[in-house]
Structures are given as structure tokens and as C-alpha cells.
Length: 275
Image 1: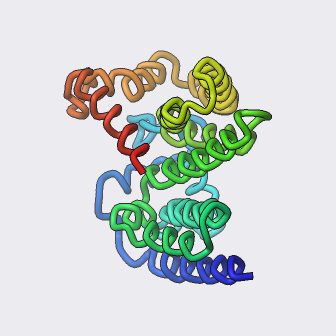
Image 2: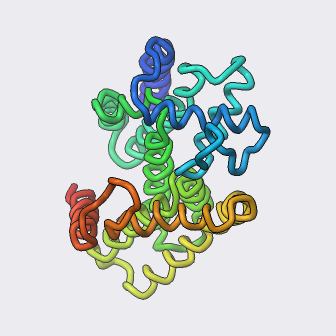
């Protein structure tokens, strides 16, 4: 009963905290307007696969976030600041509520409630959850997938983690393969450290999950986008997902050498495991 009380109270807090003021400010960063223009181009060109922004550029990121913005905009009457930020707010709400459910089952309703409030009021999380960028949606997919993968590990990797695979697929469709690689790698390291399941079983299981998580994005968007964009699209995919980590992008971003990026990535993975 207490868990239900905290859950419904959390829903009220989330709704009052996130949604009333999403449209109170104009776009104030180039990243926000860049994401919004993709959704606007989708609607103006009736092209939901690979629209051309301002008649020049194709989008740098996969389109799931922009699909959501475009869909909401058809219901609200246009691509506005408010409509463009709703997907991020919904993603943060789902992430906070999923976290509450996860910890309420493994700790207590009080601990889960405090965890959710800390999540909501964290500065960077709040900023991402009320902005027009893909990062909050990516984070929500990855976090919920991590919860599901942990639950799968409690069953000693038996059965098929359908929800985890679906969330990982959503993460790939939001920002590319990193959305699938990072949660899988973190969970593999976590299980390897605990030594409760043999490493070959862990690796085989997660290779299968990674493959399954890649199928939906490949079928639903990547192949169709390649058909439209050809080599230009393929080069963009390589630049965003390979050259970025090697420090060899064609524009000024992630210019550090590969060993720096790998070390940063490894440190992040280990930091996640410390708690």
C-alpha cells in the first residue's frame, strides 16, 4: 500500500515539475534548434527517413527523437519550443518512474522515492529533460535497458529479455550504436566482476542481445536511409560512430587520440560499477 502511495505521489511531482513550463523560453542553443529543424523538415518534406535540413544537411543523429517531435507537433499545431521539448520530459518521467519501481522491489518504497527525487532534481538531468536534444531520450532508453538487463541477470541470463532488447533498439534509433554498446558492456563487466556466471556464457548471451537489438534499427531506418542517402549517409554514420572515437572527425569535435577516448570510456564504465 505504501509503495502505491509513493508511486502516485511521484507521478504528481513529475507532472508538476516537468511539463507546465517547457515552452516558457525560446530556443537558446544551436543544438536545440538543430534538432527541432529536423522534425520541421520531416513534416515540410513529408520525408520521415532522411530529410534535408535547410536544403543542405542530413541529420547527424538517427530519427527516433525527431519522429516523436514531429508526431507531437502534428497534434499541437506546429513545431514549437513546447512541442519539441515534450519527448525529453516524457523520457525523464519514464526513467524516474522506472527507477522507482526497480528500487522499490529491491530496497524499500522510501529509498526508491528518494532516489527518484534525486534523479529529477539533478541539474544536468533536469536540463536534459527540459531541452530539445536527443540525450535525455537516449539516457532513458539506456537506463531502463540496464534495469531490465540486471533483472535478466537475476534469472542467470535465462529466457529472452524482450524489454531490454526493445529499449536498446530505441537507444540505437536515438543516437546510434553507442546506445546499445554501453549498457551491454557495463552489464558484462558487472557480471564478470561478480563471478556468479561463467564469462563465456556472459559474452555469448550479450553478443546475442547486441545482435537482436540491432535488427529493428537496421530494418526500420538504417537500410532505408542508406537507400536515400547513399555514400554520403554511410560516411556520416562512420564519422559519428567510428571516427568520433578515433579522434578523426572532419570537423572540430572529439579531436583527442583513440587511447584518450578509450581510457575515458573505460573509466566511465568502472565508475558506473563502483556503487
